[in-house]
Image (cartoon, rainbow, N blue to C red; front, top):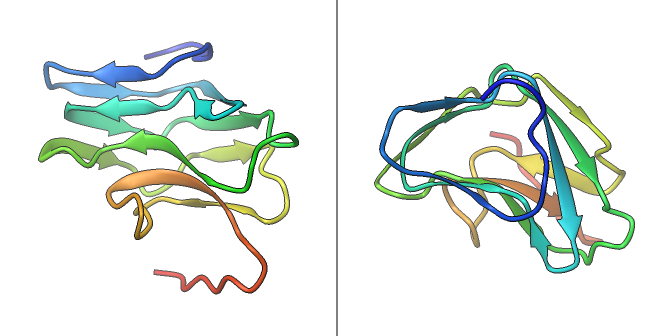
Length: 119
């Protein structure tokens, strides 16, 4: 996909191939949902994408799935976004998932006393 990606709802990748995110993606937290990407099959490439995060001020401390590549035939290409804009203090991006959401790119709020180990 080229150009700016934004809007409500989840984008689902089916049919294989590679979804190359090559510009700016605006990730908006909207109440209890986020406009993430679910790869049912194929590859999502984030290596040339800038992620812009919005609406975190009212977001509950949580784990928000940015890209779900947990399906057996889904893959993530790129170890990180080119740039991340709007990531507030106490929030981080876990590119290899969490215990709750393995094989996902996760926007995670770090609760007090939480210890994270870099991979």
